[in-house]
Length: 220
Image 1 (cartoon, rainbow, N blue to C red):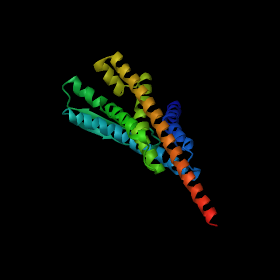
Image 2 (cartoon, one colour):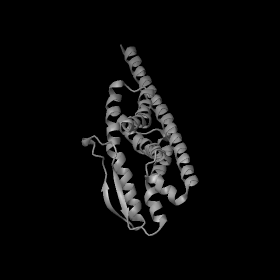
Image 3 (cartoon, rainbow, N blue to C red):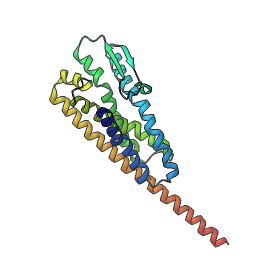
Image 4 (cartoon, rainbow, N blue to C red):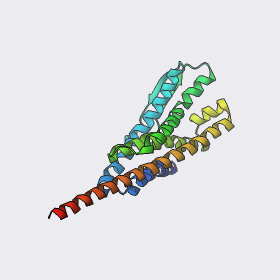
């Protein structure tokens, strides 16, 4: 029960709250905000584990290994909110295992850096696609640097446990802390740009509507 409670708190902190900031601070009409606020967290649930595990698989095949067993989506219909994996095999060197274990986090860092530049000048005018891109490029990677370190601290022998066995505790925690800092910066920077972009756009629309109304009044 405590694990489920912790997972729910993590999801609220990393997924729901940033989306609320994006849509509510952007002064979008409420009727347009509710659908993406409901749908995007659901899409996150169905994309987070598959992307993470497929990244492990990509890293495994990249270094000459193979995946002998995998599950891409937790069996949520049985009440499971965890339980996805990709089990690698065929490694003869520690660097191969390191690449396989670290590959999802390398992809996360690339996504976070790309987001900083992509969202700098705003994005799509479509509310849903803006939120979806924000989730995929910022929030989804941030989840890895929240969920996995907490699991690591609680004694779960997951990815960071394997990475620590190869590169040591100092290098592992340095990587985790730097990545968390990058995630926080990427999310906050993206939110700042997108909220500013949406407010500027809405102001222009309002000004345009007022100008049209004024001209119509003059014609009358």
